[in-house]
Length: 304
Length: 266
Image: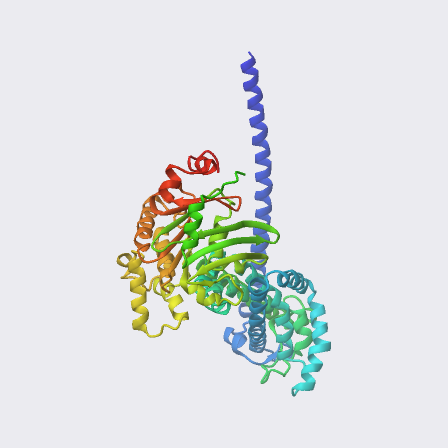
């Protein structure tokens, strides 16, 4: 009798657990499903819009990717997006070139040289840097970097160099924090083994620490580049937005993002002009996928 | 705490050993005294085992012997460490040169993310060994001394991380031997390994002691009994007992040592 009751109690408890488990699982599945649907529909939307430039408006793919003339208006429009693609790549690469050494040195300083106050001081600074809105970066770039470049170098100040410098400051925190994480995750023993063999601190950094963390550092650089590639506002404020391939670093240029943000308000949905902007968005999206893919590859290598 | 810590005759022995000993060595982390005034000799061609419960200061003591505690901010060391008539704990010691004399191996195998060859050649390269032939020789002899040569001679260019745990640890020993140290410090070198690998490491230690002094920290009582000539028992930063391993394990003078060895605490 008593045993029966206990068994019954037990059974109802189990059922309650089952119900809770079912509700929790359903809710989470729903959230995940929503996320997947959102991503897939977005990719589909951008794809279909981006491809319609070539399918509906009959712009040739090679004209789009390799054409240098961008004049979407008028009776004989041409949709050469190469200047923007080139602008995006050049500013991104330059930004990475400027930011990477600085970030890696900052990370080494925080973890290896002065791990005490170095980290305490720089960690909040880095976090703050990553929290500043991009419009502020652009504004500062416009009122500090552009006049400086104008005074020192030929040209108007605005252009590729200004854009790259602004971008490099923006991606500093990304590269630095990824590198700091990688350096802190190194086994303490590894460094000590190098010291124990009589290597100095610099030899240890150059021959043990950096080679060991290189895949992770590169991950940081790629993540930074992804951010630079996708950044619109700050670049747009300082790069000049001329639809040409610049012949020097101090000439105006455009990036994919700046053309999209500037152009999207002036075109009507479904028009060839609008569709060509979508094509650029598609290029941006595919580039982001590529960056993510590279990061994945690097992480795989790091796991060994 | 019982008053008589170490038998007087053993301490006298410590004073006799001129070439490698510590004298009143104290190590602080901030204000916390982790090691309290320890004097220990490390005679030639012997293995000295440091035993004691976790946190007794034996690893800290070991790490101070090649000034590795310098790398920990806030740690200070008082007293002397005499090596060949020089107090290496004095300020102005060339730590880089010193560490060439003293090799160290850690609990977890930690090869560099490089090839087997480059792991061994790492140290000699920094100490001015040039030329492929000279390096080849050092790599071979170090690997032979660590009883690893036959297993890896055909794949020296392979990543060291592809080796098994036991092989990696022997590689780390070979790496430590590559700069021809006179002293080898081992911090629980076999505690992360399987019994077969542990046996190989112990065998290796017995062979290596013919050439150099070995100081080993171990949690494994049987291991200490098997491979060491002298044993030092640490407790709460103090040296409770030191003597011939046989004596310490069969007839310890201090009841605390006996209890620890019998496994009654710690």
